[in-house]
Image 1 (cartoon, rainbow, N blue to C red):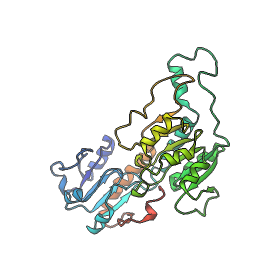
Image 2: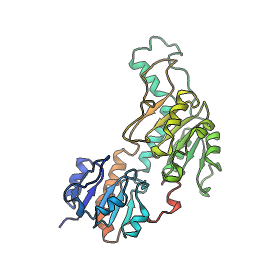
Image 3: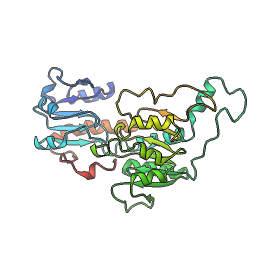
Image 4: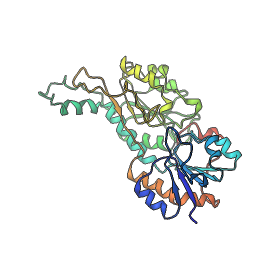
Length: 331
C-alpha cells in the first residue's frame, strides 16, 4: 500500500506525477479554509506544506496518523512545533535546496529596484522615449561602491553577499550573533544596519519576535536614498509603514517578493503606471524568489526521498521544540 501524503498547497503536474508512483496523494487544501479535510486525507501520515501556512492543533487533530510535517522551502514559522513535538510528529524542510535561486532573485530585485529598471521599461513601452532627454528617466546611482546590508546572513544571505560583492558593493549584516567566518561589516542592531545601508535586504526567518520589525523607525533610518528588498516573509515588514514611506518619499524604492497578506497585494504597493521624470520611484513587485527550475528540482528530489525515509527514521530532521538558533537567521 502506498503511504498516504497530504499536500497543503498546489504542486506542479510534473511533481504530482512523480510522487504518485510512490505515494497516495491528497490535496491541495483551500488556503483560506483548510478544514475540513477532503475525504480520505485524514489518513495521511505526512503533511507537505509551506512555512507560511498554519499547521496548528486543529490541523494535527484532523490528522491522527500524522508522523511527519515537511515544509517545502526553508521556513517553518506556521508550524506549532511544540505541539508537534508533544505528539511525536517530526519535521523536515528544504534547507539550502533553493538558496541559490533565492539569492539570484534577490540580486535581481536589488538591481531592478536600485537602478529603477521598471520605470525605464514603462517609458519605452508607453512610447514616451521621444528624445534622448535625461528627464525621461532620471539618472540613478550605480551599485558599485554602495553599501548593501543583509539582515539574516544564513546560507541565502551569504550567497546574496557574494553576488553583491561581484558588483563591487560593500557588505554589512546584522545577525543575532556575529559570524566568525566572514569579514563583512557587522552591525549590532537592525536600526544600525538600516542607517549604514544604501540597500537593505531582509533575509531573516520569520517568527513572532520579528513581526513588523521593518517598521517606520527602520525605514526612516534607511532614509530617502535607501532601497528595501524583502525576500523573507511579508509579515516581517509593516506593509502600511512601507506604503507610507514610499508615498512620502522617505525611502527611495523597494523590491518586494513577499507580502503581508498573501495572496492579496495592497493597492498602495501596486505601481500606478506613470512614466517619466515625475513617476514614483521603483516599487518592484514580484513572486517567486524560489521559482528557479534547479531549486524546484532539488526540493522535488528531497520530497521524493524524504517522506518515506523520514517515516522510517532516516531523514535529516529539524527540532520540533522552538530553538532560537532556527528562528533568527534565514538558512
